[in-house]
Amino acid sequence: MRTPNDTPTSTTTAAPSHRLAALPTYVFAWLDELKEAARSRGAVLIDLGIGNPDQPTPPAVVDAITKAYADPRTHGYPPFRGTPQFLDAAAAFMKTRFGVTADPEREVVCVSGGKEGIAHLVMAFTDEEGVALVPDIHYPVHSRVAALVGGRVHLVPIRRDRGYLPNLEAIPSAIARKARLLVLNYPHNPTGACAPVEFYQEAIAFCARYGIVLVSDLAYSEITFDGYVAPSVLELPGAADVAVEFHSLSKSFNMAGSRVGFAVGNADLVDALYAVRTNMGYGTPAAIQAGAAYALAHAAELTRPVACRYKERRDVVIEEFRSLGWDAAPTPATMFVWLPVPAGFDSQGWTRHLIDVADVVVTPGNAFGPGGEGFFRVSLVAPPNVIREALARLRRAGVRFARS
Image 1 (cartoon, rainbow, N blue to C red):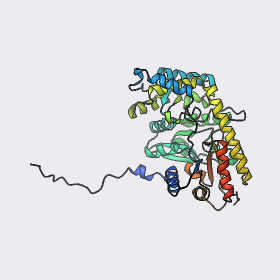
Image 2 (image 1 turned 180 degrees about the vertical axis):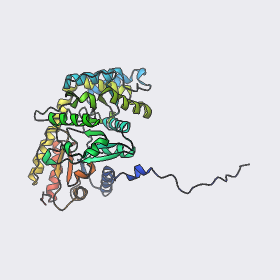
Image 3 (image 1 turned 60 degrees about the horizontal axis):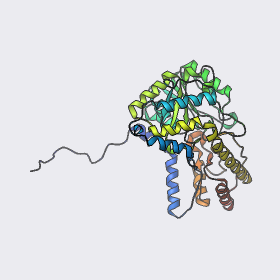
């Protein structure tokens, strides 16, 4: 005989946290809905929106992953900090590429992609009392995680006339004294801007003065052109006291699906990141780390053709948009081109317009924060012939740049 259940029940389930609900609309989700609606009406889109590499992982890296996974010892949980093979390879890469000496046992930790690693570091240093300093044009994770854990975000303006570099001295001292983190990302997604060594020196001094953690997102260090070589902040005196730098294999090695990268820098700061990771999960599978170790050991030969490919595509995008009236200037790094929206549109309206009239997808600039309003990003994720077809569609649709 079943006993009656007289426990009161609610007609609704629990609502998401107020912190999650308070986040602004995730524009990339809006863009996905827009693309799905276009495809449902039969559109064949050329998608230059999301920065997802279109080329395969190098065969030698795949072979290293396959060989490692054939060893049953890689089938269990990976070490929390990373496999010794991977940590040694990351430290060797820092020495070979940047001249930076890092202790693989204390100053390096494997992360499951730069995005997750940065999120965990932000969680380690942000709470209701802290402020994160983030440029007002930024990769979304740089600001959103601080808000999710109850911290405050102070957006620092970056503009074209300053090379998209923040004016750190313009940050009010009352804000700087409460700041826990300064997040920098150069070469910069989405603008392609690059930071000179002198700016990093200024940032190190600023962070040392106020006791701030300098977070350097160096995801595009190997995608550079025209003789430009991206520096590491850790090359500079004083950086080892205040900085943690994130390196990702997603773009430079076409390993976005493998979810692997590393953080390197001040041992105490890396330990704080490590502490969050141990409470959140286990990390990247050991076989993937084996492939990543191979990639880092052969970085010069593997990344050079990737960078050359993106340069060729960048040049086509610049040429084609110039032919439509844009004053498009080539930037020396990243896999993106950043352009102004014509008069009469905001960023999302322009993106919708290009899908409606030409079946071409770009990313609205406000997806990267309020400073991106009035711009759009073109991702170099298609071969030159496809890029030319996308621009031919715009030309047939009568798209031209009009100044306000």
